[in-house]
Length: 352
Image (tube, rainbow, N blue to C red):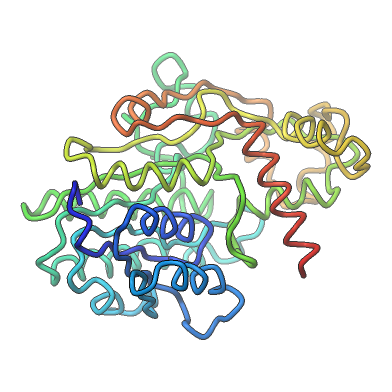
């Protein structure tokens, strides 16, 4: 995909939080784009993509595809040189009822179906896989055992299971499978991007992304009595889109790239950022909760004691140097990302 912008790029999950931003950036850079969506009849969800079709006539083609259906991506992939495999559900642990059916099957079988389509499509030269920092560690406590306690691309998650953190497990097995497939042939190359919690303005009116759900709980006042001491590796969705394109365009890009700010951000810090803009919003917590009520009340909110023990109060630095030096990513301040995320959420709510 280096300098040739005449060949189409495929984006799976084109109507999702990340996918829609990626489609937009590719079109702005002059690429013809094929995007897969679950249903071309989903009018509200497809409104942003339809608007992009009008803004870039003849440049964006939509295809229906099902992650679990064999051969589902063949038509959309036909003639493409680059494949961005973005589609994969993301939910917070307390929202997952059946880890295998909801997380592992779509992530692993979906990746297998995309890999099989790549094998059948001779024009494909590069796969950019959307993974996650969760394929590097299972629990925050795992990072403390890494060299100097710093999160780095060198590690793979070995502690998550279908029962314990099924989303991280699903993304880990899917990424490993893709690396095995790349190693078994010589025609196409793969790069994986491993973002932290993705925040920023959503282009889509309805998204099931866990990152949107997590901040919605904060905005709606779930934590008004105080913010629990949970911190997150964070990245702006616009940086994630740019990193995908850089990973495809830079011929020297290889391996895995952590996409996250060098320092983590807590619920309390996010609340403080939003209150700087909306000081009278009473739903936002003004204080940080001590650890003991979280340990006592956590299970009532779907958090197990094991999860609380392995995450509460734990922070670690992030080594994002490869994304900066090799992909040219400049991370915008977390304040801008959180405020843009919040304002987009507010305008979506008033539009509903």
